[in-house]
Length: 71
Ligand code: SF4
Ligand code: SF4
Image 1 (tube, protein in one colour):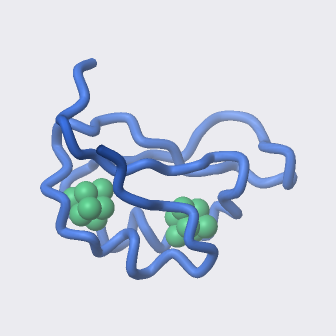
Image 2 (cartoon, rainbow, N blue to C red):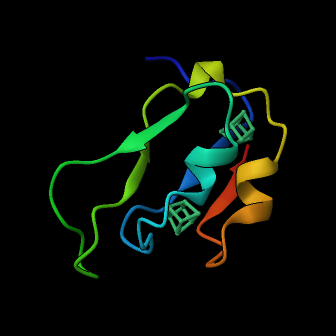
């Protein structure tokens, strides 16, 4: 799938799978990945970057600062 010029970047290896980002996202951009990451968590991954409206809510709520904007 094609990513927009500016898009969110989520590092699944640092994610703890708390789900806060998915709770605030109204666009269905992310979902929980199958399998554990290096931290022993099932991380959230970005599956529909084209649906993201760059509202920044997921970035604001992530306690671990796993999500950022990337050009
Ligand atoms: S920036 Fe907004 S629309 Fe994009 S993934 Fe985060 S919460 Fe969803
Ligand atoms: S809020 Fe951060 S740590 Fe929690 S699931 Fe989302 S990316 Fe992972």
